[in-house]
Length: 166
Image (tube, rainbow, N blue to C red; front, side, top):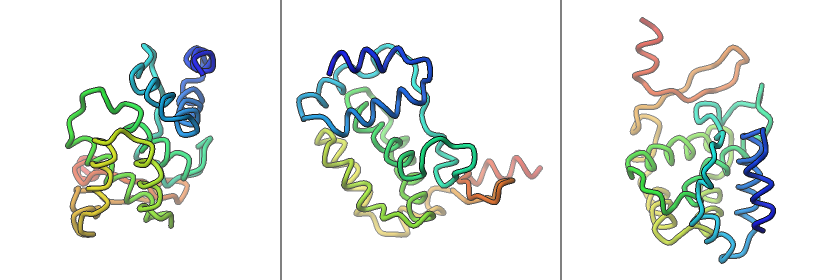
């Protein structure tokens, strides 16, 4: 596995590298996942899915579901790096609402990732899923949707829409 990771981290295509790492993480044993978590971020830059465009297909290399799972997997992979829990919760809301907008079952997606996550990340994902619907809605997080030039749905913060309309 370490050899595979060495190949992944030197890829020029940082988006492909990230998706390969996510795939490796999701298909590894608990000990191998622990190694990836402990080594994160491997001292390299990664290109993550654009959170605004998780519902979009035009101009995207990976499916919506793949990008949603890769986005959520970030929290499992980077579990031991300190993060502001508010940022994680906000990201969960973006991912959750992206799932609902495109007809994916967010509970199933969250559970599939939380099952391979560290206990603290598993707990935070499960806690988010257990929130009342109104506490994980777009409006609860000051999010809204807009239709882009391709007719696809993008998520934006309400404060972004106000500044772009001025």
